[in-house]
Length: 406
Image (tube, rainbow, N blue to C red; front, side, top):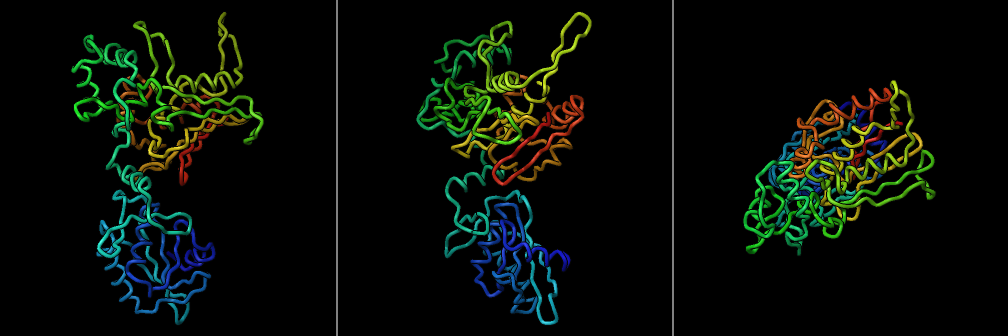
């Protein structure tokens, strides 16, 4: 870091990624700040900078300060971490110590030592506080150590799954031999083997992923499972809307033996909403009329599928949103991208799966790119071929958004 960069950090004040501290704080308080930053997106702790943005400088020798910081990171942080340490001379008498924590570390959740206990800390704005149980679970999920979709649905039995859709999946999609009674041990075994159910107390309880994919009424058991679809008249959100609909139901469609859709899944419902609320243009190709939609179907289906299979379902109380404006279409998925994944990486073909069971089944149905590179192979080239625009990919603090231009 240069002195000019340090001046800019101080001028911009504390934030979610910058904390000002004296170097006479306790090891526990320094560890708590390290942990909170590591559990968010990393950042910097400026030692020797006051809360009012004045520089007081280190009170100890810079070498001793470095040894102290590294000892705190090793002994008071779990798992132990190795921050980057540097010093910058502010003036003749003052030196600022800079503790830099890596962005998107894969070892979340980090914990700070507090007495004989270890406590997970999170950063909320400029505040560091103890994580709630839900926030801690989300950190485990972000690190890939827990897949939320494999949890059993509380209080539910396998009867909440649509046996028609399951039979279609087993027999038409997977091409298995006809299975017998849905109450049989054979069905139970297959559901468990495919992570659509788990064995609890000698019965099969549906997993969250099973309910999302094949549930008769997923919204009842996983309230955050739908899509809120809104079409606005202008280019900004407004109370006056052209259409406002809650899309709900299982992810996968029900098809008959010929492959024709009997009941659409969520992806198809989303495309139908876009189709009904945008205006196609038409041209003749020989004797045939060809409609050209404002947004290509292939791109919409891929973007919606990505939102459904990769969203963070541990975040309750909010659906995926699909917003159509006069000049663009936006799909917002709750939850940040998992560790190490960036919008730039997605554009270059980086693959990831927050909910592997959802990815596996939706791939079987042909909704997911077999190579897991739908952004690179479908969405970007699809929009470039359609209207020579590039989609915007934005990873925000609480959501991921993709924006397609009309």
